[in-house]
Image (cartoon, rainbow, N blue to C red; front, side):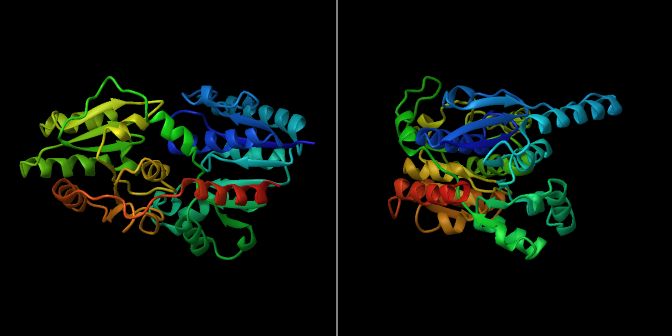
Length: 364
């Protein structure tokens, strides 16, 4: 008899969390050991078509009506309806969007075997304020979950430092799964909006949001390279709240010939093949799935020091630098001058096998 699993998330729009979620539940669906239900706050996003057809999708949309009392009443009614229909109806339930209060409620309601998946480095999101950090995890009722999964060791360690040992037996580190065969296959598709030439081409892939990705660092590093009369190009694949801000910044600094904004791409992997080096300038990451994607496609990496980056990248797949534009600039210039190749081959199959073993043990 198949086990019933429920995953709760926000949407399936482009992003690292969404990519990891789709990869994971599609892999579980292929095993045919599970009936999987996905509950979304918003049933939208470019990854909807990527889901295995055996996965059932439910929409649970909180009310954000401007009249607060009206919104509160509607939300109470929705909660009661969900409880009546789904209370403990699943063998295991996962709140996959850490920040989402509805996802937390859904997962804790749907099964007594509930799991909270922590994707981001919330200590940095909370400005290293332990009181603010603890308040965040209290708001999503982390202590009510049977297990808490952290996607990197550093996020788990920071949780332990801030919260203490009260949930010691609940914590486990599991990196994000990747569909490495699909990544390689998709990377072979042709692109029509960019043609590689002899210029060293750097690639950024992700959300265009300053509070976490800090693409302004990459633009200022590009300005320093331009002032050194260095020939290069940066491809920006993605979209986000600060897209216009970054485009304006590039225009003001007269870097239009250096930065190419390609927008949101359902398949970003051909652009890895059109590039010489991946650059990540983030302030914080839970687990940068783009690292693994670059490692699979043998693209060297320059990254700021984010979660587990030194452990994963240094002296193997690229370089890890401080979180400032000058450090990024120096690494980019060094790469343009000397290039470098991988010092070891990434074992994607072994990486996935280790993750799946942990997941199967977790969900049963």
